[in-house]
Length: 151
Image (tube, rainbow, N blue to C red; front, side, top):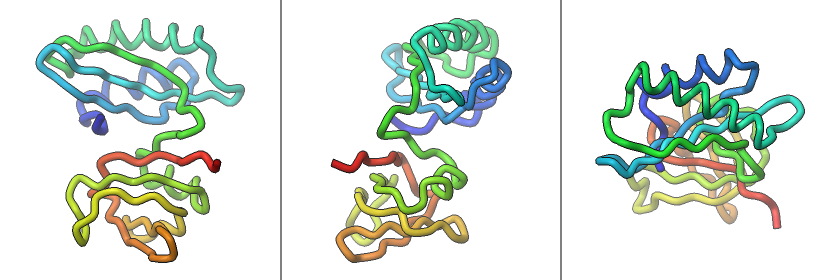
């Protein structure tokens, strides 16, 4: 799954926020009639199945009107869970010090996947300590990122 397009986000975010939930982010993958739009929401007291159903119903209507996805797709609404996805610079700032997984769209020094401790965020670059080596990853190159639960 990849981060959702700006057109999708422009449709989804106001609906989720307007319902009083935190819009964590959205991913879209697939296409040509087999796509999946995954929307993550959160709330001060957590998220229930009923919350997800209510948001899904409202989003379905808004997405039908705006039509940012031309092909058929499945809509999934869920809480971010323990492996919370990271979408924005603010997300990375908020979870500094936590263990993360980051996948880049294109390789950096022959590597696309990084799993380690999120050290800092500066000048749109995140620093991740992977086994004692600090990698400086450009935020603009991040394809996917999420927290990693400590085992």
